[in-house]
Image (cartoon, rainbow, N blue to C red; front, side, top):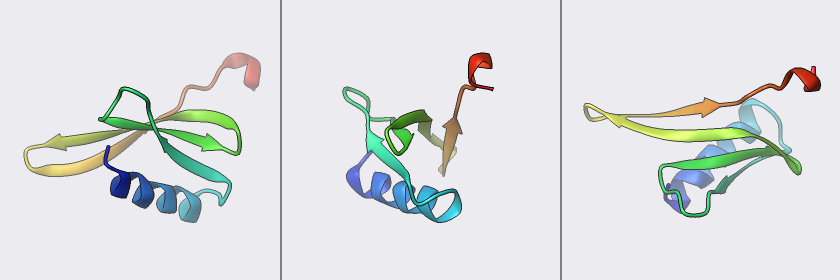
Length: 67
């Protein structure tokens, strides 16, 4: 993902969910970015370009031990 996309996603997550959330580039991956709440890793947001449409998909696993 490009830096400007990550910056827009970061602002979106802060505005919609929580100001402590951050979106960071992933090493060696350019189709996705990592999402954090403070220092805690939450999940990955993927860029999806299909049929000329652009969307972003957020994937977060919730471990049973965390409930």
